[in-house]
Length: 590
Image (cartoon, rainbow, N blue to C red; front, side, top):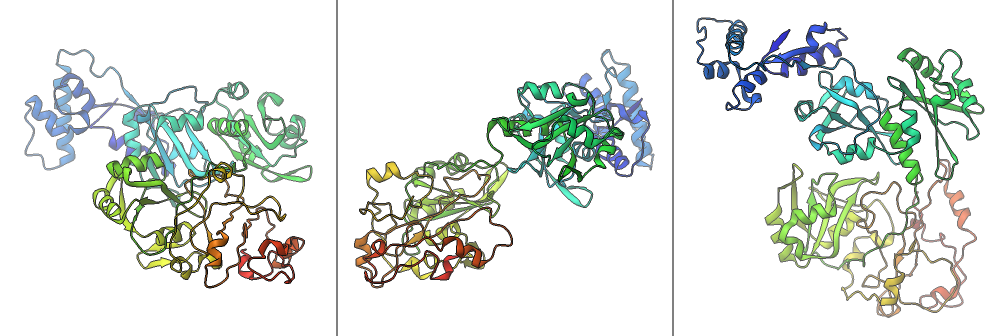
């Protein structure tokens, strides 16, 4: 039986290197005694086991070491032998009774625990999309992963996003796993962070009886089939796989994924008795069933539960419901630095975390003044803007909170102006080289627009506030009607506003429409130049074919014309009607 000085060399060096080089280790290296832990059992008053060394153990026992030995390895082995013999002569009978075990194989299965200890879970980020649970277990070779403890995460489209949650048998294994941060899997380095038990249960847990019955068979290899015809049944799938790779239990070994109303999704899972049968089935990848090609992937019990939970709770691509939008913040003119920018936020940070981070300074935030910045994929970018009540309060908050720690990350807090904040929220960038405009040619986003007019108080009538959270800011129909009061930004220039706070955390899809908040006629009348007020002048089109050109888009809107009554206050009544996308052509964004 092996006896080692700690677990590092065996778990973190020998087993990972042997796995990387495809070497098969003898069974001797899968069980061992940790001398540090055995010493700590008999001498609990000593320092923690992880801080012990051979020299400190010999010193605490009063043993004499061979100072004439030049080879450190030989000296360490001789000293360990002396410590072991001294411990065996002691009164304790519990020593060397329970050996440490290194699991030879990762055990698949469903997560049956309702509560998972947060001290045993890590998140791995940067995994190859084609990696399976066995690949993740191979990356953590030498550490004991709990049964069914690898949960691959899926994105909003139901595909793997390169992240996984891994649950270990105890906190000591979790601490060793964190030391593999930025180790490589193939040519990619993997980031390893702490995670919570709630996150693991949310991904891998579930109460579906159908999934429980499907996963009740032990030691089965799971494959996922994607792209099945909606009319395909068990017999069609079994015929597609063929007799050379039989499914365990026949039709009972197939699990079809369906919408809550019973409609098929085109996804299914299949069980196979061994790795050889699963490999034979994977050779059918992109084979033809009916008129469709079928994709086959390795899957896990956690992915089965995750996919079923996703479809059972809501559609895979839910439509974005209208959130309760806060009253728009005034994009005041000028460059007063009454805002602060938070840079380097954890991606999991919420608005509540930001308020707690600011502490007493949170009392100086304007109503609805926390704005999260999302990246082009709709995910948190690590930046946020906070509107403070005054420039002095913003400077005080920046001085007090700059480089404070939030969830093990320090956050930079710097003052900025309202103009800089609004430009970034519109899609521009704010870096060390200065402010870059948004990648859009809309007239409302040109730099002179922000500093042309003075700010006036925002007017939002009560009856308008009750109607504000509509499904879209566009009017339902272009029918001339009596003018109604609307929420507006001060100044005659129509400005574009997208509230990122209302859509945080990031939705699976972007908002379907973005509209303009118009200016009242009184403000337009006082303007030196006439600006065409276009309620809902910007329309976002989703699902456009990749081959669509400008003419195809214009042909869609040719039938939509504005009646002259809609802008009689701006143009002569005798002017002919205009199409929505006639001029200026900068309104069309591809």
